[in-house]
Image (cartoon, rainbow, N blue to C red):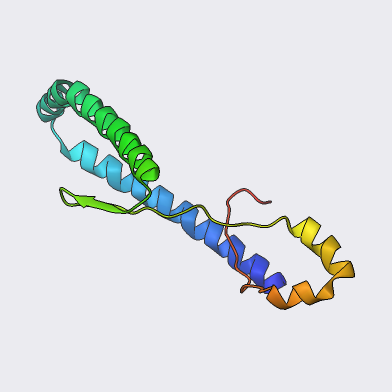
Length: 126
């Protein structure tokens, strides 16, 4: 297990170095831009920001409406360069109930399949 802890600590160190280098990179780019250009860029940002935010909101709302409509329709729909893929609800079972049931009905365990284990890395697990 100690080698895994060492790898995780190395990963943390590399991510910190990457973040620092990315910050240095952004600062170097910013320092290379003359103040007059920065003012022009700020004006351009201000001129476009409201339109872009409004359009992003409209897109998000329409995406939600499309998803709801496709769910109600119950089939995949293609149009305008998009495919809205319909997927029926996933079937799940109450594992605790089935384990209890299997105690007196072990034949049900023939239908059990166990997937491969997997790992998810999360930050902050000290």
